[in-house]
Length: 358
Image 1 (cartoon, helix red, strand yellow):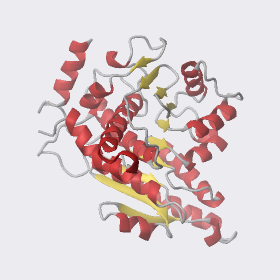
Image 2: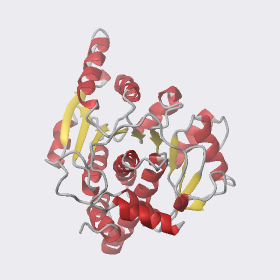
Image 3: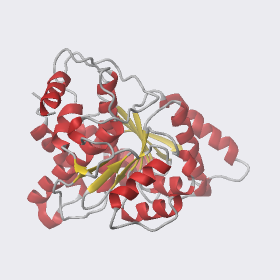
Image 4: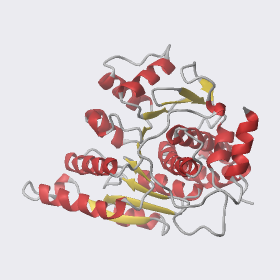
């Protein structure tokens, strides 16, 4: 098994590996590489996150052009919340994506732009207080139409960081999610995007290109809504598998002391030691990271026809492992004063330690 993994990693970083622009897939394979489990229906096995990172992270190639290493778009950011979409979008760039966009409300755009000139910020979304009842339908069509002009350029969306719960805003975002499904575009749902999904399950139901990243409370609400029961603390792996299966093969990354990942077929765990510092914003790093690694995994698989792995599972394992490594490194440097920005600053160093650029 290790021989197969090593040969795949060597192929991934060899000059012969195809660097063509990502071809989107309408279906994600459900089989998994040997290093993420021997039996799809076996009990949880700890994933080899470092090996997954080495496999899916593309080598740097002078022949590649801007955009081929990933184009990510974050849908989120409102008056109250501007940090979350920034954390998700800048994390994607720090890991190695070429372009990172943010679609947010007009109030949030100047603030997010002021955080970094690296981000492409689109002030398109609207909240209820700015829109009259008569204008809503027309404005919603305008918002979706503007996103439609861009959506084919992206490799993955991150939906929810800093989104808020304004009814009109959520209605617009639900239309964007349906648009993404139309184009078979993967998306990661986090934060208030999970609030939207929990109340509108059909937005993700039976869509294998969707990844949900709930925390403890978001997971409780999701389990109650979908399975109509309380969280089973004694058999978390089986319940997670059941939840993902009932949702039709959606991949779920359940955040916790150990991150649990399932698509309804397998359950994987990432338990690398991270940091005891629980500052807000780490989930935003994770959602942006999943988007990048999912995109890279899909590119790997579409360029290597003998593989039939699930890019969402690989992306979740890689993102979880890297975040934990970066959080641990940041904590060794800053201890109690560790902030999310400190963890973001450690993403590149942590990935370099696993996948050297040269």
